[in-house]
Image 1 (cartoon, rainbow, N blue to C red):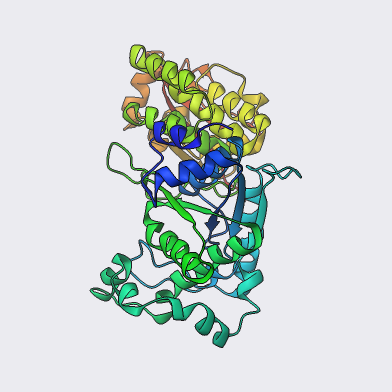
Image 2 (image 1 turned 45 degrees about the vertical axis):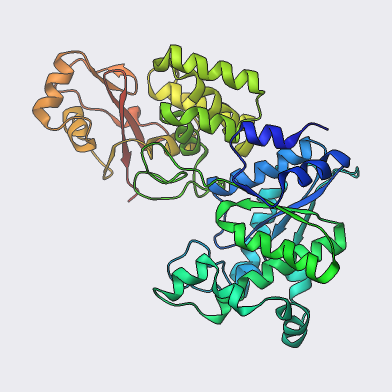
Length: 425
């Protein structure tokens, strides 16, 4: 076993802990069972959730036993932490479907062997569903002083603004009961989560002390922020980067990492990469010495895309990225990958039939501000259609130029890429 706390500290992945010295001693004594919960509030987990999934993986690689909990019960309620308004409740059928999808996503990152560190996946609906309201109030509710619950920052903020229903007010009881149940069933002694979950985590550890007289720990990771002040894991337009390839394509996922700000890449390597400390330090040095080469971003993008989507998908993404910039054959890309790649660049749609001139397409796609600018780009030898230099200002693509019968790739200079899609009738 390795000292997981030292590793997490080096990666700046420790925000709060109930007692680091006691936790260190517990971890050193033998395999510790820990858990992290994931509520099904959407059909997929996202990049922010990935921090917690990989933290479970780090503990397992360090010789401990992870439990991934999917909130089949708590997902029906919704955690009020970090929310300024009441959540919209989803139907039981919707939540059940999301539970299955998220169960599969978390499972891909953990090893489920029969050894002492073999992972377990659970749903808290298994023990919450059969419980009556009277049992819940008698066995759990009596251990939660209302004055302490009212003092919680999440509760105070909501009571001072939009208010809070009893449903969300009781969420902390449900999550605390999860910790207690896992303590009883699996000897779970540690819960991890984001720093916005600190109150929920410590409430669970306190419930174990009150009910069982046992000792349990809580450990949170910092909420990740980007150097430019924007939210981590969001597009410029505020859209979320999901782990599901149907919601965020592997190409877009790869581009998120490859486009990481130089100021963020060291932080991202430490938080997400499983490379050694020495390898990460070396990549950071390469980035500082030759920032234009973007070696750190490329290494991170390849590692994370492989981890989430697999090596074959990563190879397709890299091939598409190279081909778009004239370093590979566009006609060798499969349609799904090409479509995903063009979705990330300026593009225009044209109806079926006779295709417009390249000048018109360059302007319509936004690669050139006007047709006159497009003509100058062609005259200066800086315009490309499917990676072939456009020689004439009157050039017009033919249907034989369409990739997969509906796409064209435009490029201005070495770095500015655009796309054209022929719409279906």
